[in-house]
Picture (cartoon, rainbow, N blue to C red):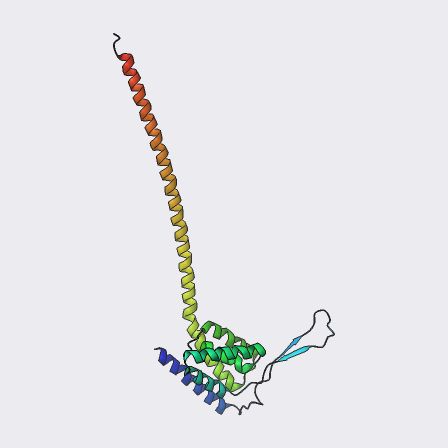
Length: 219
C-alpha cells in the first residue's frame, strides 16, 4: 500500500510536469517567476533607504523531480547529509527557492526516511503563498501539497482523538483521586466511631459493675 502510494505520487508529478510544459509557453531559468522583494525600513528613521532581500531565481521544475528521484534512492545516511547541506544553504540564504523546495521534499516525499509531513506542508504552503513559482513548478508543488494535506488529515484527527483521550484520562484520574480521598475520610470517620463505641462499651461495663456492687448484700 505504501509503495503504491509512492509510485502514484511520482506518476502524478511526472504527468503534471508534462501537462504544464505542453499547455504553457516554455519556461527557462531566466523566464521563471519574478523573485520577491522584502522591504525593511528603519523604525527610527523613515528616510533611510529601504533594504531589499531578493530570493534566488527560480529553476525549472525538472530539477525538482530529479532531486526527488535521487533523494528517494539514497540510504538513510545520505539523506541526512542532504538535509544538513540544505539547512546550511538556507542559513546562508533563507530565500533560496531551490533549497526551500528541497527541504519541503526531504520532509514530504513518501520515500523519505526523515519524513515530517506536517513540517513539509507548512514549508510548502509558505512557498505557494509567496507566488514565486513558475507554472511547471507550481504544478509540481500543488500535487505534493495536496498529497501532504491528505496525508496529514488522519494525523490531525489522531491528534484530536489523542487529546480527547488524554482529557478523559485526566478527568478519570482526578475522579479516582477524589474517590480515594473520600474513602480515606470515611475510613477516618469509621475509626472515630469505633473508638467512641469502644469507650461507650467500657463505660457501660463500669456502670454495670458499680450497679452490681451496690446491689450486692452487705456482710
